[in-house]
Length: 221
Image (cartoon, rainbow, N blue to C red):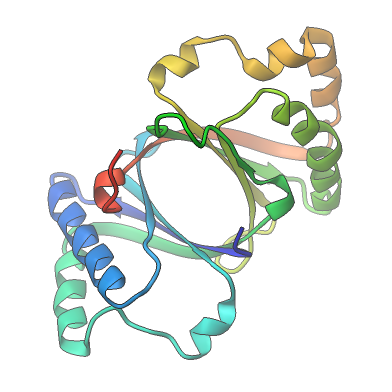
């Protein structure tokens, strides 16, 4: 798994979603033509309205020393002006990944349609304790649930290092109606004991659900 995630979070103006999505399709096509990796695209279904996440895994930040553009200067200026008209706000940051906690399952099954994103803010100075809890408590139990997948990352440049992100693909909305798979594996008592390990470590945690936008990634779903 690549070391870094290049993350762009965009709030689109009301009524401008289709125009924005057309610009994303144009950018994806230009990136493919230029031999650049495509972006993963998610539109938020439960969370901030009109929000899109564009995520690009990258191996090294050193490429920024000699950045490439997927379009020529004139074409990029035109495209940039058009997409800017659709955007209310935008935020850029880099997150460092934890390849040891990556899970890739369900390779032969249908593609998941949703992404559950857990954002956890850790109390300052407790980051190492959280990492230890994930490695020694959470991931061994989580892997027993036969998950579709899991990616863990931590905010760095443009973000707070107290922010940890867990992205878990989910088959569909109906999957949320089923019992908690982690609770089924551990049982209530063991689950409570495991979560007790976060006392005095986590400041807050929140969940967001995004749609995996295969149509904006040039992929079949």
